[in-house]
Amino acid sequence: MERPRYRAAIVGTGGIANRHAQSLAELGDRAELVAVAELDPDRAAAFAERHSVPAVYGGAEALFANERLDLVHVCTPPKAHAPLAIAAMRAGVPALVEKPTALSLSEMDELAKVQEATGTPVLTVFQHRYGAAAVRLRRLLRAGALGRPLLAVCETLWYRDDDYFAAPWRGSWDAEGGGPTMGHGIHQFDLLLSVLGPWAEVRAAAGRLSRPTDTEDVSMALARFANGSLATVVNSVVSPRETSRLRFDFEHATVEVEHLYGYTDEHWRFTPAPGHGHLAELWAADAAAPPSGHRLQIEAILDAFEAGTEAGVSLADARRTLEFAAATYASAFRGRPVAAGEIAGDDPFARGMDGGAVPWAQSRKEAIA
Ligand SMILES: NC(=O)c1ccc[n+]([C@@H]2O[C@H](COP(=O)([O-])OP(=O)(O)OC[C@H]3O[C@@H](n4cnc5c(N)ncnc54)[C@H](O)[C@@H]3O)[C@@H](O)[C@H]2O)c1
Image (cartoon, rainbow, N blue to C red; front, side, top):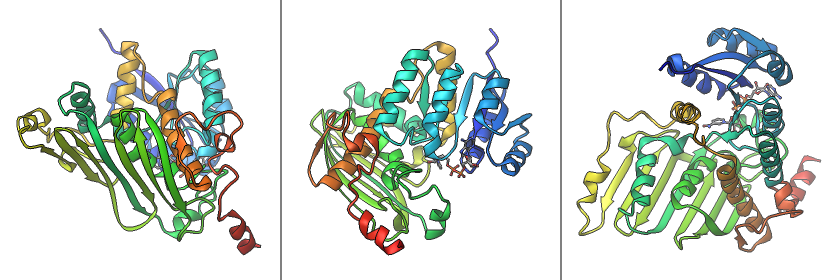
């Protein structure tokens, strides 16, 4: 039977859009990038030329009015994610939205309502869930081979200089939604959550230690999970020796990965507990496994479309990750633990990640004045 060829478009042709276009190209006959929509005409034209895209639009409205699409990739700064995802759902086009899906839990709930009403899904890019080793780890854990998860350490120690924050949307609560918690470490703790399952409680601290931002540049959280396990989560953009590190201690093995922006099997290390040496065979690294990245996630989405199964990362799953970010901020700024489900309704931290309670906001306003 001939496989369908999916018609995809990209909205927002900045940095990360190139990764989406390359991934679609690598999928060969399975997908075709038929159009882009971008506010900056020069950028759009250069992108279309670079990736041989036949149609260019000045905005999403014209894109949806003129193209028959199977998938739209939303690659704009975070502030535009929710409005564009809503426009996509209303046009009947599934949207794959870059992280973070939305600026707040309220926006996530609005997206869920429209998804329910239209029956058209919104998916979030969390590409590190899809690397071969992460898939294997979840499979072995669910099969009971590793025993109970006991503790985890999750560190995103990255370095972004002041120039990086010159882009007007970066480092602002209004446009980016948060600092490294929302924009950088979210990749790692999303992977952590995909392995450990629902979190129950978060205690956190956050600071703006060095960068010219409104948001935090460092946050640290201590989390308890519904299964009883404990984890620390560190998110930083002020760390000169950059690394992305995750370590899980299960009853029967330690499983670790250290990489930067993507991993292969070679970045992972598996250490069985005494008496559990046979587990190393189950882990058996695959040197040919492709690196974690956008292509694997997009491929998994097309597989799900074809099979009629639920594609990921679903809105419900992405909300759990965004709620972890909201709890990190709420705990840090309120100075007390935050339970899962606690940030709801009119809670200021449901409406915005800053919760109107950023301790350094006033001193920054005074410094700028
Ligand atoms: N998954 C990852 O590994 C990863 C890596 C980097 C960035 N990102 C995410 O990707 C998103 C974009 O980041 P970037 O660095 O590519 O940003 P960017 O500033 O380089 O590009 C964004 C583009 O979107 C355009 N744009 C803005 N609003 C628009 C609208 N309403 N309609 C059409 N075009 C619009 C801008 O003109 C710009 O060209 C962010 O959410 C970021 O967090 C993800």
